[in-house]
Amino acid sequence: MRMRIRAIGLSLACCVLAAAGFLSGSAIEQRRMPDGKQWTTANLDVFIRPSYCYDDSDAQCRRYGRLYTWQAAQDGCRTLGDGWRLPTEEDWRRLAKFYGGISDDSTDGGTAAYAALVSGGISAFDAVLGGNRTNDGRYERLDAHGFYWTASESEPGSAWFYNFGKGGLALHRQREGDKRMAVSVRCVKD
Image (cartoon, rainbow, N blue to C red; front, side, top):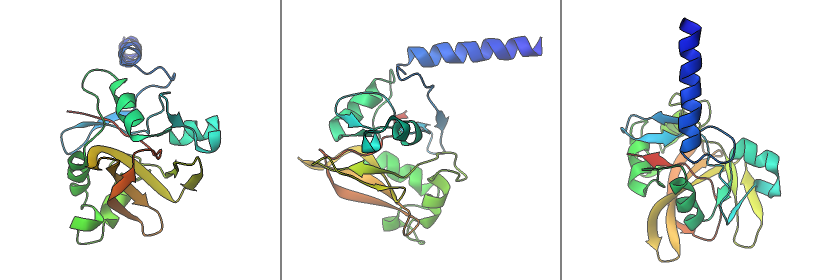
């Protein structure tokens, strides 16, 4: 009887996730975080144009998720279903605050938040260092930086993004993200 209930539960979970828009064949990984919001705990890997696999390698997409331009990031989160969206700068900041804060507003320069939110950290958020794709098509910073879009514009052509920097083992926020570059994406649901 116990095994039957588990099988039904897994079957139901698969159906719900398929209905939520995961067309890439992988199930959504999500978790309610201390900020009260539901966050994806794996980088988005939904094919939306323009989005890219690092070095145009499918293996990199499987490991790091796709890299998205700012508009594609918003579109990608919406494909997950009702309520899913690209997190704002304030969403990211609140999440980081539960783990000590970002470099701008913490006593440790963002190192505790980095350690908690990066892959293997205590939060189970599991941010990975997927690098980026520049406007001119160059791939860079794999395994050195995990850049993540926010929905918050800083200027008409740029938006805030969060930077998990391996060199300083710290979490930073940056305002000058050219919307044409492609970086990683996490999605959130209130």
